[in-house]
Length: 169
Length: 168
Image 1 (cartoon, rainbow over the protein chains, first blue to last red):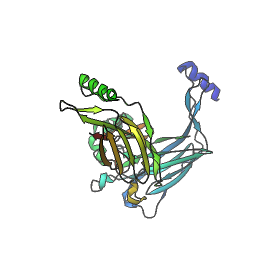
Image 2 (image 1 turned 90 degrees about the horizontal axis):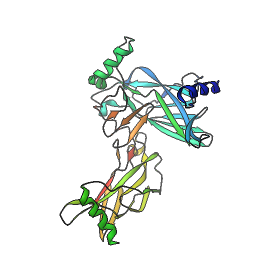
Image 3 (image 1 turned 135 degrees about the vertical axis):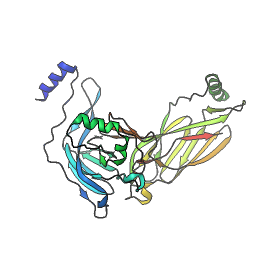
Image 4 (image 1 turned 180 degrees about the vertical axis):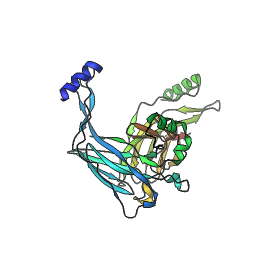
């Protein structure tokens, strides 16, 4: 299967890129800490896909990154904890933007620390202003809404990025 | 020895205010751990002097050392890049994880300058998050649907030691 994919990639792109590993497990959930401010949470959640990579030398001596299956990762912020095994999705909360709070109530960054055998690595997942969801289901209309409105950035909720790559070494 | 200092001055006065290229990278040694270390970034150290014409020019060859309770930088020659650790910023750490100030001591042609730099967050280092990159210094995202932040994320980004400019 993998070979076939590479062959296909070779013929079309003249480069062999390994496909991303398939996610077979259910999304992990997060535990919101008892003392954390629940009232700042927005409606709904987002899903973040976490994948781990290591650097390896390919046959041509070039350094390429190779995805790792089964790296154990912990997610830690001031407000929450979660654990995943790569590649896996994790459900994360959205936060309301609040002009009365410092930095508009930006939620704390989440430290993602991964371990795979002797390999270790971490990355920081910072929240960013979310996009306004029009509910129209029309991607183009949504995109115009997002790019065209600076106000969107100040009124939309805070959310974490949708994909994270953690390099381990 | 004298030539070493003279040449960059001459070169600089000829071509205006260009920076001297940095070709040496040093790494700060760790004396103690705070517990919230997170990767590292490069602190740029440049030195400046006032030339005979009264103009401020960058000079090379100043020797700098720096230390605090956590790290030590020994005898780097300017201009230099020094790899220093960054520290996670979060409420769960004492003082939000901010490391102590870094005390610099630089000497150049017999003159000694000491200065202190405070760790800062959210300036100059980009935090990558998946497909998009947040540039903390400009407050923008490298995304097709990028938005300019009105609020600041610096309260959630790691602490790091800022670049240093030493005046002689």
